[in-house]
Length: 154
Image (cartoon, rainbow, N blue to C red):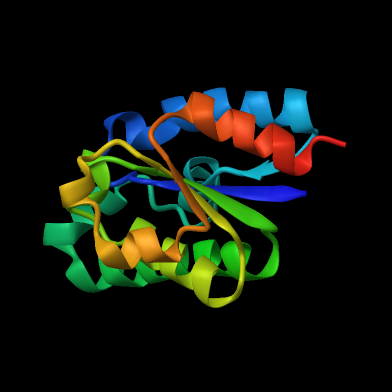
């Protein structure tokens, strides 16, 4: 099984790499699932496209910035659609100012990939659209881990 780890990057601390690395280790150790980490995927694209300063391009070269971000969008959605078996998504404050997580969750739902959502917002602040895309919603990673063990442990 292959899991895509969705969540805020653009407005998250360290691009949201902390929870992804920790949860990826748990998935690999406990379920032997492969992990697609979009933070690592984005870093590869930055190197491949010589885009180390892409964030500065937002104001200095908007067309170049848009072209690079579109490359990231295309890459991530291909991974969601064509490679992942399911998605784990951290829904927290960092996703509210971005758009990628919204799109990834919607696309995964649309193509029939289960989305397991860890919601750290209040129930009132969780979008009906996003909660409806989720196969299941959890209030913590510990509760998600229990459910994933039941679902996927052989």
